Image (tube, rainbow, N blue to C red; front, side):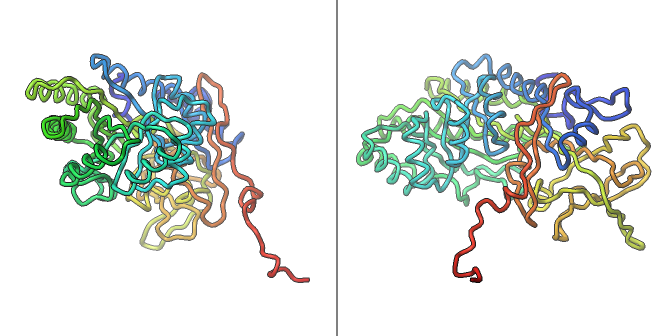
Length: 444
């Protein structure tokens, strides 16, 4: 089952306990809601470790592989520590993510810094900390990073991020490998970038190429197409420039199952496609097997997480929908508003009750588009019921906000009946701690 964890919706430990409540990681969700309040992010450690093992097992036969967790999916000190303990490195995309890793005691030689507009301050911090790789995205960054490294009398290892011209069939906002993309060098710009690195930028050490085809990918063929392009490009670069590059970063993007209609490939299916494509291309071009970097994010953390809400007011529109409001919404999960994302959910305090009515779960925020789940069948709901929304581990907390001046939720890690807070709930004081009132506005 471990090679299919991304193909299930609920955490592996989800069950109904003797009290008739939903339980995850041996913890009663109703009790968690009482103890930690709601909204509440809950992460199941066993599910998270299981998907990590899926990746390690799937790529075990390919010795030169580096698994990097895409931190943007969910970045906290505890999650970073847990994943580091499981042997994962990290793909970071900001100085904040990098600093989180540093303060958590993560080995900086397991860090790759990605992103299309890294600031001088962020690059300088990364150079000072001695991270393993920079994925350079554009000509401006080439020049800036070389200058920073030169001033610090250091040489840094880089990958060149390219756009391979592959469009996966996913939401247009999360396609990153097509030709007209904000990410990476166009294929026609590679030679110019290489010439600059070879002739001008002496403090940059090019190790390989980086490409990423998108997110929530259900088609394994995109990985084959990506490898075909990358290996062919490595061969061309060697022939034209005499430069032997031995690393390729394939990005991440493996899809997960949010609803019953979703049918993502397993980790093993993806791994088999990748390994076979590399073998075929390297034999075809008589090129040695490169080191592979992979950057799974969503498929690592997503279905290990759920979000708990307390249900409140209800509204029946005459001849229309019935709205049931939760005590959270787009500030703790903006994905439905951004991507029209869909979820499934259960009432944690009555999971075995018959689904009697179709309702729309509305968020509490002052936006008409603040809808958590539209038209879901649930038991008859009452004020105070605890709603468990599944598969919310990725891009919920990491994209959360203080919209309407509300506090961000707490997060707990559960395992074997134990719950540990790993992110504290924000307080009202937290909301105003950075506010400053200029003296000229204050009345004498």
